[in-house]
Image 1 (tube, rainbow, N blue to C red):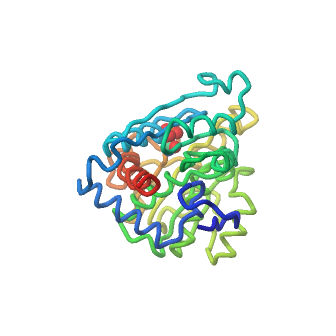
Image 2 (cartoon, rainbow, N blue to C red):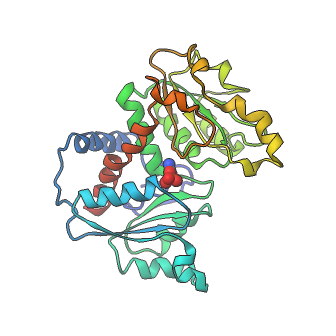
Length: 309
Ligand code: CP
């Protein structure tokens, strides 16, 4: 497999970037997740297999849904929830940690604050590595469940989708934008100044023929798009609270705004959310973000079967 973001060769079974998949491979994996969702799977498919979950950053959804996926397939998980809780706190390198852990497990899922950490882990691992988020880099399992969630409501091909929030550091947005370029989607971006999509990624997407249109606020696109992909804006990216509050309403979804939306519009969010979705929106027919987080289980079951069978 070739990673089309970096151009580098990858051993077949690691999943480091969404660029490790071509479109056919994504479609096949999503089809498999659909079968699993319909309870059409072997509950002992991964009996005897062990997943090591190394989460060096906080996580609820990714970590628990990987562990749930493993348990539903008859396997087991070992987990480390922080650098402080393992011997990296004593100065052990990530490379040595991975060499050791790959002797204890059949696959490793890793989240790390530094971009490139999962790829480094793959170089030192003797078992498959899945990237569960590396700094501002990639989050491929999230993207697969995002695509799965879109596909439950509409064909992905040719959709108009708005990515909203911190698009500079938001790894879920980076992975999803790349994947959508395989589906001829038109991308609308809405982000605070300084938090726009990285220029290198925007150029790569444009080179792949993707149309990208920048907007100042959600109101400009609400009546045009088929999907809104909300992301969290971290307050710490702003010099002070006042600067954050000055712009935050431009990136917030409310029922009033949705009055102008297409009937079939769906709202996605990788979660956790903070202020960017009014809780009244949860009851609307547009909200898909809790289904989206639930979809993490069948999609990650399909991923685990892919790397472990
Ligand atoms: N979407 C996501 O990555 O959530 P967690 O940080 O809770 O894993």
